[in-house]
Length: 113
Figure 1 (cartoon, one colour):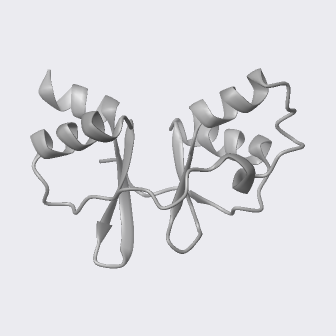
Figure 2: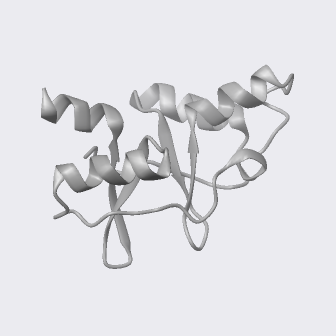
Figure 3: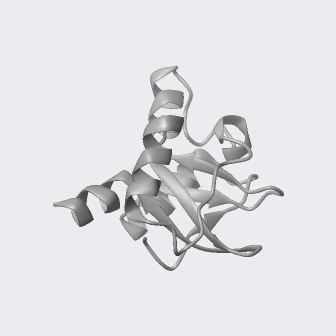
């Protein structure tokens, strides 16, 4: 998993979210909502492809709400199966109520190679 976990406000613009992703060389951010949500680079690209300017949309306009999460001790094969079954590429890692990291399909592929 990638740590530390990078988060963004639901009130941030897509431009601000994209800048955070670029600065930290990541492709997803947990959104500080309850329950937590997620925004990915794919969400931002899709909004741009629809003709929206990243400075004109908020994270809350395109984020995925109520995301799946995994505990830090879950086996890699189980993480991969969840990603496949849910058709997702990112899973926030939680320890109790705390978000501690993010595991991506790139992380899984790197560990399996």
